[in-house]
Length: 464
Image 1 (tube, rainbow, N blue to C red):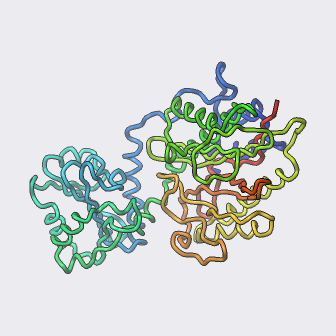
Image 2: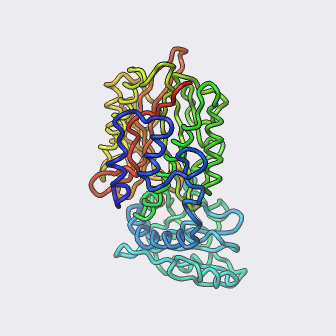
Image 3: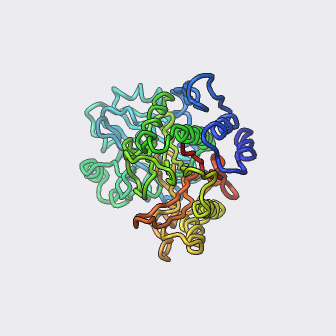
């Protein structure tokens, strides 16, 4: 762990007994995390003050550093000499905000040239009526104006011809986030470049994955603080459960209210966040009006977005004690321990240079020995700008399949993942239930570290 607070968390947040509901568990988590319970209001609730106050300079500063330090190596790994992004209002490129093109009006071009030393020279070609304002806020090295009404593709072609690059990346390809160049834009660009240069156009997708998948240390710290809040809110939500009365959807609505109070937004599709599920497996889905009952294992899959940029994806699990129970039944406890062990095996496999497939395989080797039913989901996925971000997929090894696609990508320092520890079983009614306790981690130079301490014990919710 980095910095003082996470180090303290890793030492103290390891209860020897199952997490109790609600007072001790919530207050201990809040105090250790540096938060204080309010004098009034819900037990152990997070302060209503916005934990991530607006900072208009935060993203522009981080974006500029990302372009200056991470884009060049990503272009080299992606095999690009030049990267062209066309920006315009109303139908802008999905990557506009990552290069300073989010406020484009008239059609403009953003060009990135990789130097022999791995650095990047960046240039925006903008209509004269917008170039002055763009130059004041652009993270690029320079902004060059052209007459409004001029053919921007001809201006781009002139610049490209002068550089004579071998491989020219454009945002056409199978990745939605790197597929922003429209068919008409592509045709106009090819016509302006001419047959020889147009033949050098290649998809930018691999480069985009290499660039966006690596997060700066400051970004990791933002995500760490967001993860702390995400877990706190999940535990706070469990404290509201009254078995036999509370429904999954009511727990989800509680979390929605807390998000609104704290000024954070959804980590993914709002109708499916959070997914609170005390019944059989439903995959990525909405919470239903099922009533939570004694004997239920509750899954809460929840993520928040902070600073309108970075997201979390964390699952916390609870067990509803039956009358007379003080601990989970031995079989539930065994399943929980096996799920944790699977997650720990995956975590231990994370280090630079291994494939995402290797991490998935580490857990599946454990699953094949512990009596779990087959698990159809990948062990994990990148998380950062989106809940399912770009980068290596921690999956692909089920059924002995070979590594391919994103599962064959290598882990690098700065990659951030959400990943599950699995155990699944068949219920009496023939449906399945899977414990998939989900944690977040970042790859370091020699391994990985959790963003927050992993869940060690089930949250226990007493019956009346």
